[in-house]
Image 1 (cartoon, rainbow over the protein chains, first blue to last red):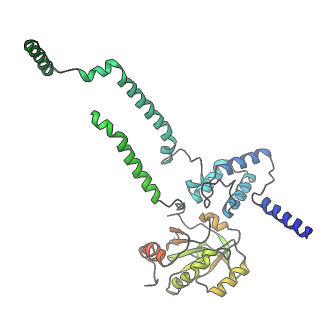
Image 2: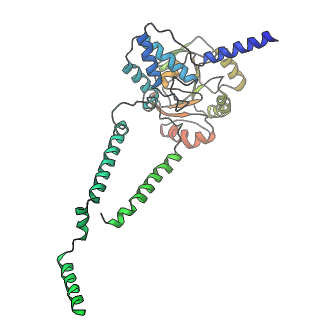
Image 3: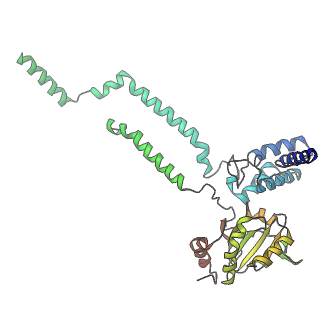
Length: 156
Length: 180
């Protein structure tokens, strides 16, 4: 009984090992790049996971592909281009700076500038001398005011 | 800007944002654009399932056809299989891409459930699947007579999918047959 239990536990641990396979790289630098690339590629099926985290079939395939391409001496850009060609820009968590993705890259900066502008104008609007502008009367109003004041003087 | 309008600015912003968010709720987050649309079907050299015959890209193009990615390990493939049989009987050419599967099991499956395919390409290692950008099964590609991929449907093909999505494109490309 104990033996069977031990076997089962062992099997369980093997399964847990199988979740993320490890690859033997010929150099630490390749391994470094592998970690980096797999952490910035998005899994096509289980969205919102990177292929480094995901246990889906496709992610396993893509990790294998990464490993093979890295060992074959491909550059990061080549590998990314290869994948984008097949799965679209979607797989990249850090999209390239071109075309439609420009909006993504520029939006935060743009919003920050907008915020600064709004703050600037609100602050300027709070200045007393600026606030006075609204209370300036045109000549017709000024005349009417003088008239009213005169009348008030006379009515006393 | 009049002061009155300034008061309404937050409301206007809210309405615009709410509009965008409402639209976002109706989008399907799992729908991925295929990178292959309007690209030629990738070249390959594999064998035909159940025989030793070599098959390449030239052997499967020349008419408007469906390319169906399937495997015996894929549960949904079993669901769509009867409808594929129906399409095939009605004269729609379907090529199978047997994706990462065991040949013997796949041949047995076709014997048992019927074979809707003109032929099935044995893609044991998923190389063709990779070039197609396959990320699961079943997936169905609509390829025109020049061998250009025109549409990709991820998921089960059933009567609704055929009549509402695939058939209009199939007809437009000049595809023949199909259940009337």
